[in-house]
Length: 216
Image 1 (cartoon, rainbow, N blue to C red):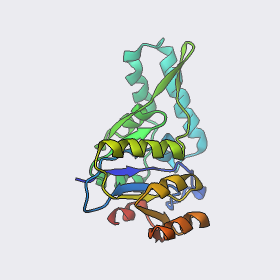
Image 2: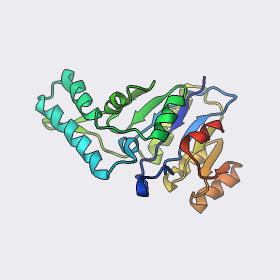
Image 3: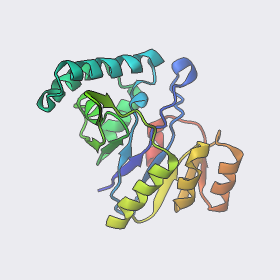
């Protein structure tokens, strides 16, 4: 059974088209087993929505939490209230349904995402909330390339990862691509990243729908 590491980049695409900017996927070679994790930021789940919607969901969730006077057993009610505002793009939905083992690590509101994605077979964990004086706050920090690399090393230390294939187009992904056995990028990747891919005998893909890359 294969497990995939997918890192949705979180970029809001101009014109809200389906040529997503988050072609970053780390997944198992067909011949090996791998234990992996799926990195996901909240913004990825509404690639078709306005940026303001992201703040709306954060605010609804935080307001709900604080109205409950920090009663931790009531947190799930707030999540349910907020999760109803999610909209999963068709291509992302197709991909989630067709992956085999799926685990999300979210640097933010993973339990909210878990409820929003209740129709998918996904395990979710990470750091959800932090306290600020007498208030709950959602963590909004961005996972850096170094964070991803450290997490990847942590996973592989515990499990037999086999050969790692890493997709990453952004400049911040270069350290992770260096760590990959087979780095893979799309044709619009920056020159220095393409150079690294060529040096490591990796792959440069043509543009395409996200789920089509699963057949590599």
